[in-house]
Amino acid sequence: MKKLINSTDTILEESLDGFAAAHAGILLLGAERKFVRRRTLKPGKVALISGGGSGHEPLHAGFVGLGMLDAACPGQVFTSPTPDQMIEAAEAVDTGAGVLFIVKNYEGDVMNFAMAAEMAGREVASVVTNDDVAVEKSTYTTGRRGVAGTLIVEKMVGAAAETGMPLAALTALGEEVNRRTRSMGVALLPCTVPAAGRPNFALADNEMEMGVGIHGEPGRRRVTLASADAIAAELLDAILNDLAPGKGSEVLLLVNGFGATPLIELYLMVNAAKRILDSAGVAVARYLTGSYVTSLDMAGVSITVSVLDSKSTKLWDAPVQTAALRWGV
Image (tube, rainbow, N blue to C red; front, side):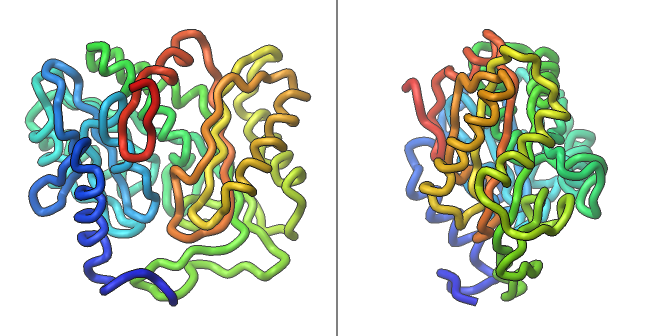
């Protein structure tokens, strides 16, 4: 295993210290590094909190800031944060309008955020994201997994929160955006969890995992490596069959790298996806391309399609200033 680490026991702490130093104008670390929070809070605004296992950077800490999250709770690599992290984050960023948890649909995340909501002693609501169409159930989740579409929920709900939208309306908005969003991914190479020191699954040189999860958990099937066009076609066939956007619909297209996929390949996949969507009568009105919801050093890509209307387009375009996303400011 070749990694830029000092010790597998301190990788998260040292990374968080570097992250906070590099983005000190936007955010700061909570006590004992239990959470990352916005440096400047907006009084009277609903506080948005997300989190999950580390190894998916920039998700979630990279989306803390103006127009997105107020706090993010990082767990150890691929391990859910604990309820006390979420409770302390809520105490730090709740300015009186309540707290909305945005939770990916993995059993540990859902259970711990639910416990935190019960114990927080304040008004808390939750939105659970489950945009992955690859499998209905896996050993990591109850129902569909929450993957790259979580970013879209965080961005649109974050923009609405900045306008002063109340907690109940933000919860309904998050659920609506989640319903209009679908994702599916493919892995070409596995990732290596530092504590394990070896790849967390095996793929032959001529194989790929179609429908892989963001922890490397299995997807629909293991198949022979195919062309980019063929991969895009299979991913979008599953997405469009499930999402069923009407002809003439406008969508946001997110092409997301898993950590070891170069941008030249990601933009090639954007081109392939756009041609497929065009032929289906679906217009790509907004794009986001890059490695935003990663799986350490896994090579591969996910495609996310989110159906837009005038409201959601405005929310997507609204100003955002975080470590990983910045426009309109």
